[in-house]
Length: 442
Image 1 (cartoon, rainbow, N blue to C red):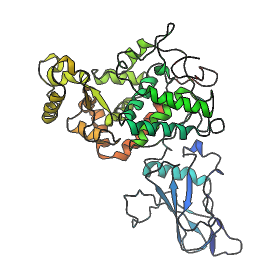
Image 2: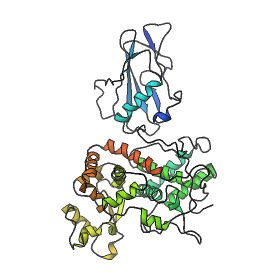
Image 3: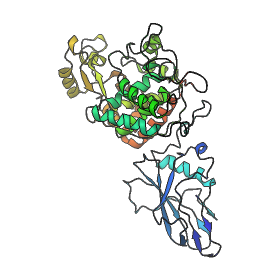
Image 4: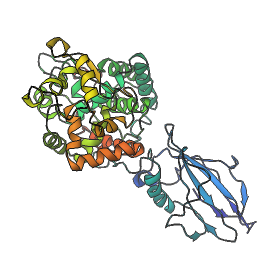
């Protein structure tokens, strides 16, 4: 975005209204969303000449998915020089707030591409749905425009499939998110979790963490079928699953984050790796952290990605020991909230036929992606032992408390951690294949 002095009017400023920043060639490398659009509040005329001494507002819309818009204010001071100042807020903020003058604001002849980098730092702090803080992929050959020419309707087709699935089954959003997690933690994100057992291949669907609990395969199948009609043999099942998980979070009221694409599908699966590498709800924090570290993630990612339990349900057997025989003591978990304990014992009585019954991970807003999960942990009301242990370590407890207080911080960090997870061990280039059917190797 550029401001220039008019040749014919020395006391006026010419502010062109633009609808894209494509002229900034290094925009993706600076970390800003490549579809960043700028729409003028003041006038839709592309060459309106504004007199000096006025304030022009712009709204920065993050693609089509920004539900918390940011606003950029360019203040044109009286005189022959331009001073730049930024005011960024969300809908909940007061418009009467005094503009914020960042340290980099200075007198100059205009706002040009070099200022985008400074603006990205402000957006990182003030716009929680911005993607400028997310790690960008370069070494793994993933690209935000990977399918722009070969399958331009990809995002639309995936989102329509996920939206339709959620409309029919509100639980499916959590199931798709979990499916993506279970895929990436077993030999990398390669859609191996989608493979059926054959005479020559033992898939991961019957591994202990997945058997009778992994769901959403039919949703991926339908999306894949629609994509094969639109653009045959083009989009990998891995990218479909990655985009489906992203859409599932967004359609549940959570954040949106851009996804770099170009992953390819694996030709093998590992039931043993699924049994060994996926974190268990019965494991201590140090074991769970070690499994995350082995995948290139860290303790912060443990806390952030555990926040996915803000939606979905768990089978009774995954937490029943906390209700009746915690640590083989013959007593309930003493840290469990008393009222929650009573309620769960009625839902999951101490008998074998209740093992597969379901209880919401977050009974307050079980289908809404928010930060209530962390609030419940602070109140000793986490459902799984692997969730509640986050409050037993000072390092993780401090993060839990922060996320319980600042939902936008959680949204921002969740997107960043999901991008990291989606880049675990991906296949690109000539590695792997593009499956025609996500359930079988070509």
